[in-house]
Length: 448
Image 1 (cartoon, one colour):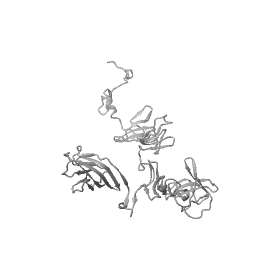
Image 2: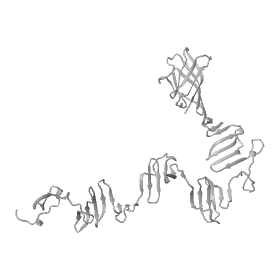
Image 3: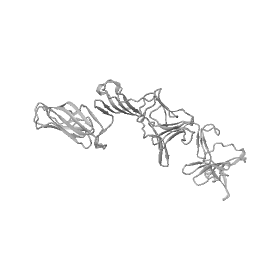
Image 4: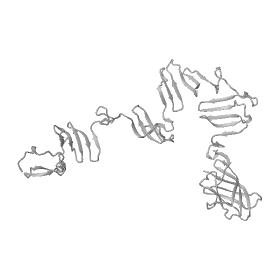
């Protein structure tokens, strides 16, 4: 082959890793060959100032190896990115992602530990148009959206604040909030004449302050769009209805005292004594001229719901439990109910039962004690007479309870005995009868 200059050789712009180049082995003073793959995998380690892989005319910008199993990128002689053997990456300055770089990135992760986002920041998935989402959104408009799936309770805290390991406040999923201290709005200082603010104290008190000379309204109460209460910072107050004082002399014409008359019932003359704190109310007497002896004598309400009502005829209604002779559980009746129930009747083995028919199935439930009163007709022409009855209330796990029914025609020794078995009432009629026999009686048992 004739001599030819290397610069005159045809260009090879797409070499592969197995292509070879001539190379001089300085130690052996020999000309040898080396593949492109072998040449690149044995590059020097380099440094930030002189990276082993750099660029023409910019020798302090490129890639080098600062340590074993590490690789770094350097620009202008300074390390900018380091990737270690575990895959972690370390940037020496801010990181910009997306947007118009470098002036307007979508995301900036700054070297001082802060982060900037052009749009919203989301954790999970929050959506005000869905009921099954859960997440947090920090919008670029300054809003914070915290969402739990529908059905979240007060124990589902949306936002919690801690001082050390002590929770000082929580904003809950049901719309309630809990604060360990007071809640202050505005500037409040009762030791000075200047100050406009309010304080909800954690001992149940409310403090409202206006600057000296500012005699505006501090409390307003509305029923719908109708204002019924006004309390001013001067101490004056206006009420749309009567106000009853608990003591002292009623000297203002804006306070109307109403008393109880000793005359007979049937007119408005008995009047009404009422105390209403907004959240709880007490009414003694009634304006209602109808109803006779069933008219209300005492009515107690809490949060708008009636909890206790005592009528003129001596009857009473309680929304909760009643304790007699003490406040322990043993002295408390938390439920009284009467009614009827339709029992599911099966044979003892669970199969269909035709021998037993139930009539007049009634129950009385007082607290945990349930008493069943019913009549059972037994057809003795049917061979399988053992029976199981479903119960109106689940029995207690200790299966305490039982009873018997007695023949309705004669008081004979044989009775229809029942016991609690699992979640059913199990009975076996007495033998020795023919035709159809009626038994009546009661069975008692306890619920949980």
